[in-house]
Length: 278
Image (cartoon, rainbow, N blue to C red; front, side, top):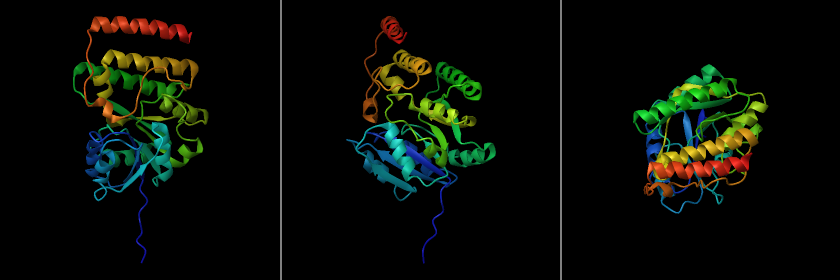
């Protein structure tokens, strides 16, 4: 007798590269979910560490699919995962994201209530100092306005939710882009007449590991560069700064420099960047 396998409502797609230190935290959170309405699809870029083994440790406790691909590219890996997914909605999460135990329950409930094709969550920082919280509150405020009334697609990063058929119809993430592939995908959907919906009720904890490694000012400058370039020129196909994928980059903190030297350095870089841009 053939066993009937229920189709999951959500397919949680996680691209990985050398994430042995970080991916267990997210998989543990998924294991504890109150609603078992999902499958997990991990697409690994042939990691050099123990990522594969750490993921397969959860094979018995999660509805898990694990794939390895030769191409180390976050957009390619997300698209690959989408092709292997069975859920009605694709939930793209970064390997260092953090979620609460009601995440999948709340997400299905609100998707069915709001009836959309694209949803962008509220992002909160993984550290509790008041300055960072204030910055993220402001970012979310601007993001909600831009999504609601803007004429150009904007997203909050790699954490985004798509109805599977529509994602396939518009071609998924553009894996030729260097950065801002999330913005470009939401913008492409907007040109199809589909506007993303911002979910204040769904919160995802955003890892500041890159900021802790590179420094706050340096990373803010990179994000400003990318957003400015995207808003003016659209797609970012060429490498405009160093921005690597891989959890192995964040095991050690970088050498810190004084705030004065940092500001001077990035003012010079900003001047050069905007001279080239305009």
